[in-house]
View: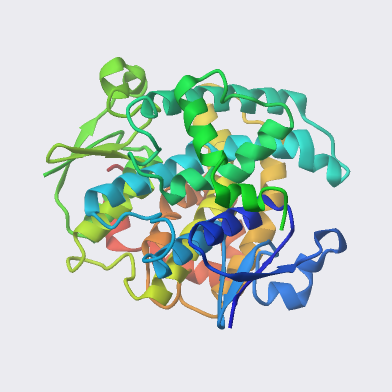
Length: 210
Length: 210
């Protein structure tokens, strides 16, 4: 039975899973969840995903949620096909985990916060908190200075080979660029890295929506 | 011996110390003077480009990001002390799901609350009570989902404790102690789980100082 991905067509977290499925050449069926109708909060959904969030997968009866967990599961299960995304050598694996943690604590809170303040909150009848958005941008800028140092010494965030950690940056990176927050172009190493990862065929295939 | 560069009361430093205790890994804490900004000094930033504690030096191998360090040590010392990351593929996937839940559905709200109510007063700043209220509004439904999950299984990833449970302890304990005990105590399954993990000898050994 083909893997089922339950998500929303342009949801950042759904795209995060989709880019990894493409990178690993794993066929999947996309089942759209209508967030505008609150389908993700309905009992039939929360029975599988108790936080009422997209996406989740059904891989032959194994239900899994949290996009980065799903990505790790796919990268591990299909280790021998497509691009290698999680190194197995202990030292390379440690550097991968360091990069994955950098993404979650030194990138995601700021880019997702900016996406919320400058785009998503309006969809739910909210309005931009300009002071918060400005603060988030300042913080993101500082973090990307550190990224520029790291990426001046190596090609990708975890070393010289691409890993899941690099791909995790794509969905929110694309969203903040689309709303005019460009903290990449002015930093030569970050810019090089961003061009590289965002031009991969796997991302091109999914970035406009599922 | 693992050298842990950190601050005795830092949440992330104590997380690594906790894992060392669970895995029976001897370590030496080398205190970084945060009050004097030692973590932003060039010699420190050369090792940790984000200027954050902790990092480890494991016989010359430098690694930062507390969750990455914890994962590296848990894998390196598999077979010794408590097993913190399962190896069975399905159990590992559920561990990754739990680890992601901790980061995005717990820490994302609890850490900023702790920042407002504990760290800011410590530096003579006033907490932003409006922000704390907003964060609690977001956190409460997440903990309702925890309550559902923990009504079906003993720990967040299944019936055995994993690193995902332990990762809640440093910020969770600060949150509990700074006036939000009732947020956990009012949910029977969550409360049971919290009492269990927060009374582990390894946590008791480091909670007041790494």
